[in-house]
Image 1 (spheres, rainbow, N blue to C red):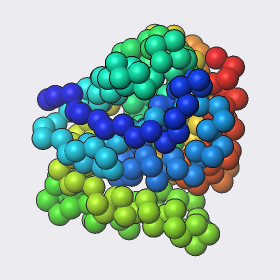
Image 2: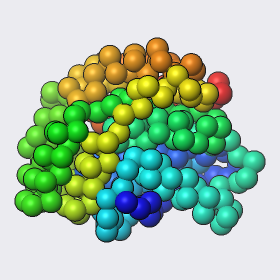
Image 3: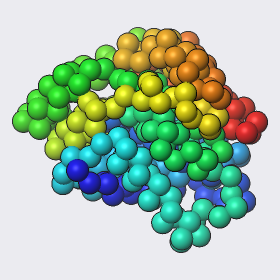
Length: 265
């Protein structure tokens, strides 16, 4: 087990604004997942994205890692950006992530309290799926590659009709999945197999906004409500039109929820 190296991408640069760090869903790059929401966020935040190992800009991992180690990788990346003066030391710092990126938000709240002025878990949960399901998926993808996930992900990721309405956005995201390193993808599955912070939410002190899509079969709205009920500073919101990739499916609504929540904290 080792802390993975994560490569940041600057989606919008303005050091006079608070910094928002955004994280990806398994199989996607943050550029294509968060790109549709950037125009609605850029007046309020400098935006730094990170990619999972073997996805987007990040190199593949060479060994397994836990969600705790993934969260440490995010902190290490932020520390490096501060050292390079990309993020100002006195800048307010926020975090929002989708699916495994949202699970990382909760892990950050548990392991690094006070680091962020607010966090948002999007299309995620305090425990996602089952260890057996993730282990089975890891073994399949490591053996047969990420294209085996495309048909199922197309159904899980998007609300009905979205692919037809937004063929470019959906195709770019599915290409991200096809291009992802299969062994790194399997490592992320392994991290999710061991992820469960349900009993640890009560100890968190950071403001947390849980946003889930009404049409999400993976992490339904009940998962956001659980976070809001168990985290002392937790709040839940539901996006009716979204399934599992809210920033791409409903960028304006996702951005509005984040702006309202973060600017209040």
